[in-house]
Length: 117
Ligand SMILES: [Zn+2]
Image (cartoon, rainbow, N blue to C red):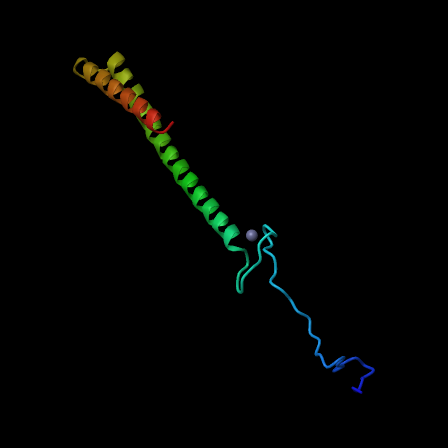
């Protein structure tokens, strides 16, 4: 007859030690897959996070490119107006140059808006 402690510790019933078995924990994100040791999320969810991170990084780069293109286009628009002003009120020898400047700037702005639409 095994000895029973009234306080409950070290009690053995039918010769078995009882300890709580904790199985693998489910992923806190999808709650469908189990975590392997040392993981916070399952492989599937981590791959998804990584994909999302790459997608956001690409979008950010695209946004930066568009912003710099817009800045260049604004400067070109300024030169376009300058060319027009030169053509209208500038000295005789600068009138054609002003028109050429305006034309070149207009074409470049068109190109930029085609590339970064
Ligand atoms: Zn998961």
